[in-house]
Length: 155
Figure 1 (cartoon, one colour):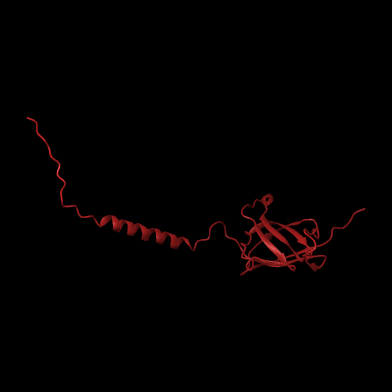
Figure 2 (spheres, rainbow, N blue to C red):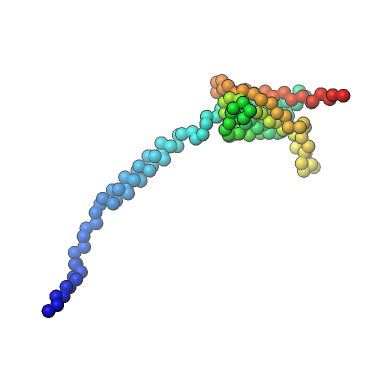
């Protein structure tokens, strides 16, 4: 004789556990807590707001760019700050730009005349100007001043 096993489908279904729902809710709340606490953190090295002026031969530079980068020749490294010059002025806070790092910096400046709608690309007022500086933050904003003069011709 052979025994036959019969599988019966039980009409009674097991009740679902509430534990998975609780775990999902707990994980979701934990994720939200992590995300909210991370929102106030500043990523990367601390950067400082700067503002100032750029003149060429005593006159405000109408437009241009100021690039402030850590000076690798003096042991500095990190992100670069690019600021727009308008009417001889720049301000990292008003432009929504991140200011430079503290320490030794290399400043590179290009300046252009006022925009002329008849000219597609303007010729720079002067060759790219470069200088070094040491940024030591003081107060709410550090003031920088760049006075660029025409190079003296040698005979």
